[in-house]
Structures are given as C-alpha cells and as structure tokens.
Length: 387
Image (tube, rainbow, N blue to C red):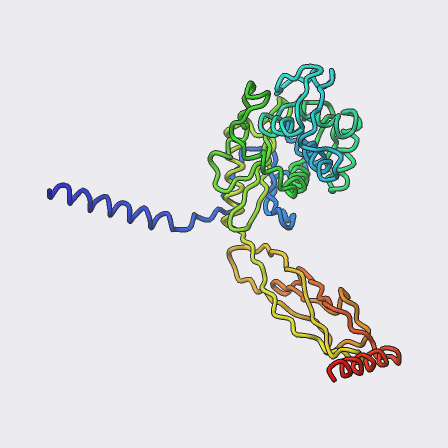
C-alpha cells in the first residue's frame, strides 16, 4: 500500500514538472546560430512580404518541383475566374502522358477530374498531372509556360525563367529562393490550396492509386500549412514550407540541400527562428465620433474606417505603436456617403506603416433654396398629417 502511494506521488511530481516545462517559452533562435545545410534560403512574412532572413537569396538555381507552385497559382486563378472548375474532367494528351520523373502514370486518353489532378500535383508532385492542368488552362504547355513567365514578372520575380510547368531539369529553367517565396506567398492567398497541402495519404482512380505526401513536415511541424517539395539532380532537395502560429504566417524556402533530411531540418530551423523572433500585433482603433457638417441639411455625419492590418514586430526590444486620427473639426456640405474625410495613421517606432482612410457613412446635402423648400414642405406635410 505504501509502495503504491509512493509511486502515485512520484508520478504526480513528474507530471507537474513536465507541465511546467511545457509552459516555458521555447529558446530563442538567433540569426547567428542558424547553420542551414542548403545553398540558398529565404524566410518571408506572408502578410507583409518582409524578408526576415536570407542566404544567397537571389542566386539563380534550379528548383525542381517547386516550379509547380506557379503552375498551381495559375490553376487556382483560372478556377477563381470561372474558366476552370474542380469538377471538370480533363483528358490526358500524348504529351502529358510522356512525362518522366514523379508521375501518376497517366495514359493518353485517360480522364481525371481537376480536383484529383490538383491532388496528384500537390501531394504526389505528379509531373504528368501538372501538364494536363496546364493544357486545360492555356491549350498547350508552351502557352502555359509563357503565361507562367508573364505572371512571374507581375509578381516581381526578376530572377526567374520557366521552361516547363513541372520542374524537370532543363537548361535555363531557373529561379531564386526569394522568387520562390514571392510565388508561394501569392499561392497561399488562395485558401483552397489548404484542402490539398495538408493531405497525408489519399487516393485517385477510385482508390486504385495511392498518393503519399512528399512533405513530411505536415506530420511533424507545429503549425505547418504546406506547401511544396522538389528534388532533381540539378536542383538538389528543395522545399517551400509555410506555417502559422499565433497569427504569424511564415514562408521558409530552402534550395539546394544535399538530401531530404537536410531540407526538412533547414526549413524547420528557419521557421523556428521566425516564430521565436517575430510577432504580429493588430492595432486597436479608437471609436469615431460623428463629424459636424457646416451649411448642410444635417448637422453631422457618422464615420467609419477599415480594419487595420497586422503589424510585424520583433519580439525583443522596445516597440512603440501609436494610433493617430487625422480628421478636420468639421466638414463643409455637401458630403457624399463613402467620401474620404480623413485618415488614421498607424505609427511604429516613429514611422508610419499604414494610413487607414476614414469615410462618411451617409450623405449630407448642402443648404440650397430647393433643399430648404423641400425640408419646409416635409415639415408642413408631417404637421398636417399629425393634425
């Protein structure tokens, strides 16, 4: 009996110690201690696009199947535009069936839904599925690749030239860690991508073909959202990994690791660095009082402002955030609903990071002979009705 009591007390003590240890903050990772086993790397904040860490960020490199981030971006943009639907059934061309590398072995003439093709592209990194999707969006892979390069330019991806839609090694098919972060950020703005990036195991062809996710971080990293892995002889092992904690969403890009273990450990270390050194804060706006109107048919108008954006701040150090309304004492009529009448400045450490427009909620008509006459007529009419 005494032994049982002693054992229970020991277990309770161990559990109490573990509980305290779990609540302790994770040790802060510094940029100086990062030793990433990769040729190039970038850590980017999803919300602002700010680069929080870089290593050879603009070196031109092959990126293997990370190329499919752009392919998927154009596919999701086509779906949003209504020119492609998840339920559409696509037919595999001879060209698409001839892809090598990572495939789901599509045969010429085989049909598959857009939904399953996206799943195969994201989860299994299927090169043939990527080509089928590309042909559906632009007619041919060549036309799609041209659009890939146009979209890259629109995103500011100055280091990138695409030669194919799936990332198979090809002379001149290059990008950079920074550019990968840019297109990853654009793809993550399409929330439907998360319906695919977090799949661990799934099936296509009515359960005949199993898909296993190539991104092992979705099973091990706290807050992981995706996104895409890639490996070829020219590119090495690569990954664009996205994760979110406490409202902070980060993109970790690793290019040119020697093996898959290195790419996953490097991506994890880079994300750990971001989460331990940065945070997001959403400023609280003051209530807006009605603004007086001069020479108007109404005395005042109500005001409204958009929600402020989250602010990226370092965890360490003193950060001063000010919310400064800039509004006139009154407004001359006429005032139109939706008219900007001022702004609210968000100032961080003395620097303005956002100006939020303040607008009028309703119209305020100016006093004129006709408006005064209508007003008096309305008062007279109401009085007659009440009598």
